[in-house]
Image (tube, rainbow, N blue to C red; front, side):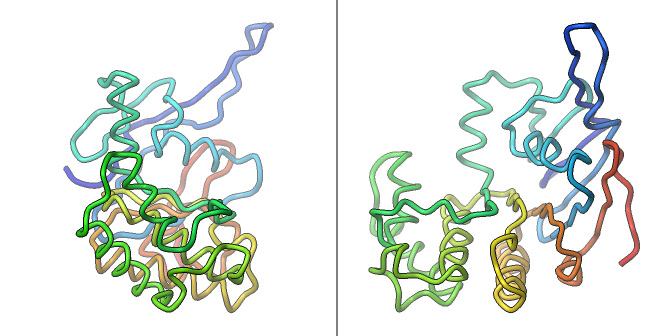
Length: 227
């Protein structure tokens, strides 16, 4: 099945005294291509751990995480690393742009990690940047961009490898309301038009109208909420 699926995923740690601390508690979730799902919850509720497991950065203690029919627990670390590069795009709280690269090169460097940059890669990068309204900023450096422009560059970069899964971690945290709405609307439009399965972790409940489903996480338990 395409997209990303959690089947009874639990994550726990044990301290030196043998006490078990459960961070995620039997979480199940299924996100299909074209869906943007939000996960909300207070600090310390398990949101970051959830997103790290979804992004193949952290291994579940039990249960299954399946990305495009591939069970991550059945893969070697090297295979998981390759899957992360090929199939998962990350949008973080801060844009994390490389200071000495211009807007176009911020995207092309993703391709450079995998080998040679082709003419098709450049065309695709420009098309993505046009989609986020930055076609006139290709040669600009991060210091000359607004906060919203930097985050839009980061959104385009997340789609550069044409990944199947998009994970957004508090993408509006550093933005004012107007820019925040623009950024989430862009993410939602890209997810729909490019048929990606996307999960957004957020504190910002004003953004939930752009999401297909909303889940609340607290004490490691994930519950579907009406919105």
